Image (spheres, rainbow, N blue to C red):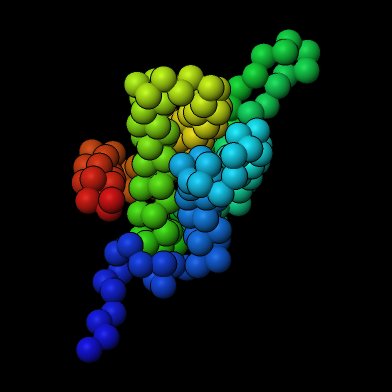
Length: 190
């Protein structure tokens, strides 16, 4: 018997954007695999370093500009004021009601966005305790890129929730009910 996965479960077949999801997961996994198993296929550490950096950069770009927008309706970028030189982050989310976020896409997205920095932290600890200090710059770059995306999308999600909360409170007129509904709904949606 072939059972259908339940909505929201971790099955890519339930995704609204399966190609985007698989590409996103492919970039996330490939940099880790090249770092972990690259020495099995070649003794050229420089090549492993370069390929891992290129995969991390592609993952950063794809997540920031494509996967985040298509999978969970969130996007962020950094703007620099030319007159003062100050930079600030700009957060964008899809309008509530215009885009339905697929529960499967959301679960894969948030799981992958938080799991990868944790895995790189573990790899940094392993590199330290195995005295492989030469790999620490690569792990540091991986941590900077993955943590930046994790923090930015977390802030973007909080910004989106606050905007949705304010919009629903103003339209319904019942602020306390809107706060309770959004908090309870958000708590059980992940």
